[in-house]
Amino acid sequence: MATNKKKIFITQTLSPGARVLLNERDDVELIEFPNLISAKDFQTMLEQHAPVHGVALGATRFGEAELEASKGMMVVTRIGVGYDAVDVPALSRRKVPLMVAGTANSPSVAEQALFMMLTLAKRAQEMHTMVKDGTWASRLGVLPFDLYGKTVLIVGFGRIGTRTAKRCLAMEMNVLVYDPYKPAGEITAAGCEAVPSLEAALPRADFVTIHCPKNPETVGLFNAARIRLMKPTAYLINTARGGIVDEKALHDALVSGKLAGAGLDVFEVEPPPVGQPLHALPNVIMAPHVAGVTVEAVDRMSEQTARNILSVLDGSPLRQNVINQDVLG
Image (cartoon, rainbow, N blue to C red; front, side, top):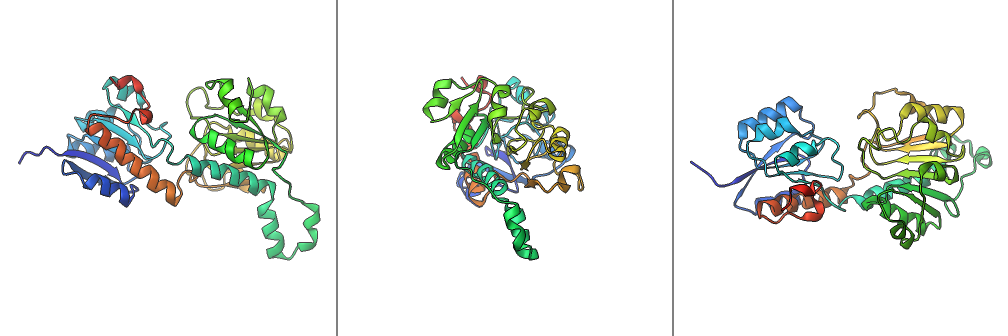
């Protein structure tokens, strides 16, 4: 029997609240798929269920082959804000909007960046070990230090960078911002100092925190030459995307004492191979790409993803969440 229902592929990680929003609609049929499904198996699923009209993606890649297999794609959404695994030009050629979760996870990522800064500044791992191992008497030889009065360089002043700036300002830090796509006046109005180049700002910073997207312009942005410009007492935080920082150059700087430490939530290869050189360093703290995946953020991102899908089905896409604006009328 023919049906007018729109088939929507949703990953297993979509929250219950988002499922309720979609299930309330009698014109939507939900089809679940594993978050880490292989490209071949995903294409097979799409072909089996075609036409498929929408998809809510976790980490699954999506491009020309998946569009062809779906035979009717109307909207592609990410349960998040990054989209480096999506072939945006392929979607644009077929007039399919790519949508992201807007500001849903930006407070969580900003908090993680600040958490990593504080963890490194307060030497949390070392202090914990001193108490646990009974080396209390050595504590005065590895004193923690304050964020107060320190200078932080924020790279990227979008949804996450602006929130990170607010949190750093609340810690009474001096906040520099590098973002060539933002007017200096906007940065100044937020209480920060706009800097014209990384090269000029890196020698000034006690902390550098990365909040720019991953694209051809930013891959390898923090290479050996730029890392060498940082103070030997400085810390580098990356909660954006793996590949923006050259991990070998970072390792070399950390081992040689040219950089004090680093906080990494993202890696060039994910998951990184067990035993990779950075894992052995005591001045590195790491997390498994979860900065934007808190309990609350998952709910916010999932529900925004559901609203994104429904907005397209209803003919009124939420424009502020569309990446490829060229597909909108």
